[in-house]
Image (cartoon, rainbow, N blue to C red; front, side, top):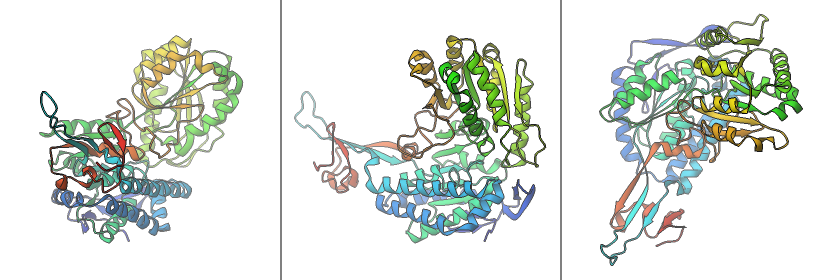
Length: 527
């Protein structure tokens, strides 16, 4: 049952005066459940609870944290079809997508559980003492990663499960030992409450401290602002627009104690289509990319919004085929009237720019909140001169840039903002003739793809989901995969510390049996 209230730790509370409802974009009407926005008092209570819980939660072993994470996964699955139905009613996304995203969410939780139960992720590093070293003795130094403290996670509009309440940011922070306060996304507050309830049940079943998790409702920006400004909050996770992520980043930087904001933001994900590939398979590539551009109405941060090619018959054939293929695809529903409104506005702004040619624009009537896909083309010189063309149009939209030669292609890539991904489409080893293009692309992206599409983000340790600004606020970290745990920790050293007072990860006997660096040697052996 949906209460519409906030979870302040394990207590439901609805003391605020502002209420709102979620929206069903398929039916074009509000959903029936009413939600109460968190009050200032409830925000403060949630943060202070998290601060207190931080002390107790840090005493939990990796095995205990793993049990907590696995139980969250179990409780999410136990919600059954009710969660799937709520997800669909608040997003307009189909049941198959909902179930797939639930599977990804559960998989992430279990992956982090396995990581912390094994324990080597803390990067224990030991340099033993050399008392008789000349001219001065060498002290015993031992270092490991420790959690930052209470973390605020902002739910994402386009992933109600995998990047929201129990999504990657939350799973990684809890695995690291950080209590989490979620600022629930207003577009899917019901989905958020159901998942929050599952997390609270898991916390109680596994003996986690009250306050290790809270879920706060918010219809606007006020709750998020108060959370980021709160002195007891030590880090922020965000997935969304450049405007929103930058606002949070600036807010956190202005605090008396600045804190990190790990924001994954906009990206147009450039795709470089080399001439030989276009000559040999323009039709095949057009069909593949028409599907990628329109997948889930283009509502992915990895949507291929920029296609780059060198002028020639191959590129001409590709543009013609892409224009034909993309209008064959039935449009789909976007997440919310506000999102499709922004899409239509930004698409029109792009189309109105001088030098743009509309190659394809779905012209048939569509249902309300359904997005009409479009492809436009522009000369390389025009693209270079007009940086407005470099901005993301969130939705089923892509721009083909016709470069006069490889030098202009390289120049365009070098002048792009930071991106999450870059893709190279190549045939017959022609990629070896473009080393400077590859080098330029590597400097602008966090992940480079060969002969594929950027849509689809594998959840694994080697995934890098982040890139130079504004793709993310810190390109050294990923928002996907178990390595994302590193966002929520800091290195901490013990010098000349008694062995029996050290954490288990750093004791001579290595009671956890983890892999450690001991005097520059990777080993699981005791000292």
